[in-house]
Amino acid sequence: MLNSGEILLLKLIRGNAGEFNFYTLDRAARRNEWRDLNDGYLLGAFYSLIDRKYVLAKKTEDKIEPHYWITDTGARALQEATESKP
Image (cartoon, rainbow, N blue to C red; front, side, top):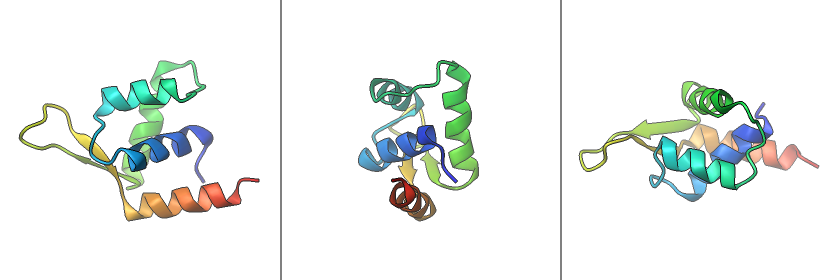
């Protein structure tokens, strides 16, 4: 089950596939109403998505930081989570 912060992160990654590194994702999440004031929580939620294989981190030669894509598993989890919300 995804919480609201994880849903936000997955939506941002899906909408910007391969464009975000962690720093740009963090800024985008905070601009889009990330509600948890504990800075470490965003990092924890993000790495939880990677551990569950909802997000793929890929480093390319032309980028210093890895960039992120939503996986098929992540897309299904996001769809299920958004469909079940009233």
